[in-house]
Length: 482
Image (cartoon, rainbow, N blue to C red; front, side, top):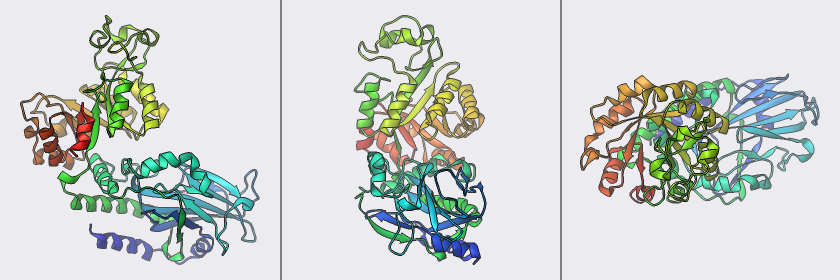
């Protein structure tokens, strides 16, 4: 990696920071952070904003109130927007601390960001260093800020998985603050995933590494905000130059779950896929008669349940009485989403039939699955309409014909991925792909998901070509051949 360019970029920001009274105030009250002994990432720069009256935070979704029930009245607050280039789950990290001061300059309250929200403590419960600085503990790898080690007990399992098996899955992080200003595209996500898997670690939960926020790394928030998109773009370009296509991390997508071993599109098949190191489970959705999103490949019930008619002919209650393969109930998409969130696994949803675009969009939003799904279809209209409903969610357009222009098709549907379904196109469908075909798709800002594939030599060839994801009935094989 070209560290010199990255260092020059950072120096350029720090050298522009004005030496103003607010900077001195921010330096005087800056918290001290105590990291886990195995933490791989430390902050680079901190943006500050000084509040002398109530106002809206410029960098976090909250209002700053100097007087708030249950806490002593403050006359000033300093907001610290702490920047890391890396979180173990994604490229970049921005955590926040707020130090509230009374008219005598005493710290009377501290707020600290915590997984998208924040928590607060009054002076008598604030942990201080021996020299009187506020002390905060960043969560290993994830950097949510706590006041005491036991605060992490409730997220410990989640945190350990994030630092190990889930390292890098978030790709380029995008929040509403920077939406549309960062290179959040499938290829960029794959590059980030590749790099962060090399940084995975097991937290010790022993906080012993001190990091002090000093004046020389403090900059006004307005300068930091303008710099962040440049910084993220520079990292993506650096990773692209440094990581060859054949070495990039490919999404392992379990086609209808681990469907080679278990009955397709069942909870059992999905659980098996998770145990076999799948990143995502692929599934198909039809609507019941009463509009519930049901997980089944066929519109007809006959092949898998032996019942007559279509899914759309029966209500959820009626469908509950049927069994897939004689043993498993037909899952609802809501049930799969609940399981996926608890299991920390993504879901690739294929829309089948009228109304699935709206039903799935509503469920994704209701359950907060925006960052954890890809939604696709062979039906151009369904993909296009879903994308209009949820522009922040990745979408995929599936197609059969080898001569299809993938970039044109994606442009027509506003899709993020193209998904050629060429598994039946000869003995070596991978030879229908070429590096130039993939480069052209990547050059258009798109990702490539390959058909479901179970042949080891073809899987190896797809990895070498640099596709972004591979579907397979054998997720264990995708893992073994990676």
